Image: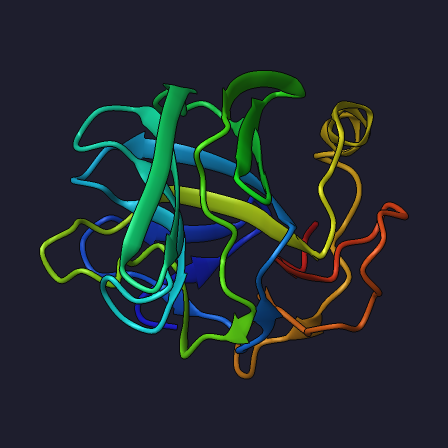
Amino acid sequence: MNGASCGADGLSLDGSNDWADIDDFEIGGTSSIEVYVKYVSFNNKSPVFDFSNGDNSDNVILYNDGTAPSIKWAVLQGSTWKAMDMSNFDSATWRHVVVTVSDTNIKVYKNGVLVGTNTDGNEPNVQIRTQHWLGRSAWDDRGYFDGTIAYVKIWHGVKLQLSDVETVYAGRDTTPCPSNTLPGSNCASCEADKYGSSFKGEPTCAMRTAGR
């Protein structure tokens, strides 16, 4: 981690130069990612997460669009972009967001409700990327995340359905993520393929704080 701190609410990032690098893991194909976050302010294209091999290199990204609060969900196959933006993260307010991708279909759910669908998306290439960053973009000219990330949960090979999203939203503040501990911190990181690939209420891998 660089400057980030962990507390009862989550991973706290100052929007200046704080970020965390979680364990490398395989992701690609049909996938679902769940986050519970609170932005304080909206820096330029500041990501909740950016999993990649560098800028324009198989990025899987959730971020705010420009300096606006719009939710932007993007997947690159190599350097080929496919993205959508829908609804808002909102400032100083906890927001539960689930993004899914299967074939060319990408979806965004906010607080348990489907808020966007795009049938012209990318499935991420299946691979272990070299950078799995929270709060930092692979592009040097983009901003850092300013706020708190309570957790990130990843389902590799699973497209969560609306009923699944409603279930994880209902348990958003009470169900801890299974995970291992980052060295020297109270945070946790991704432990790939530990929990299987079918939806049984447990993600394939997760990041959380010890307090959750």
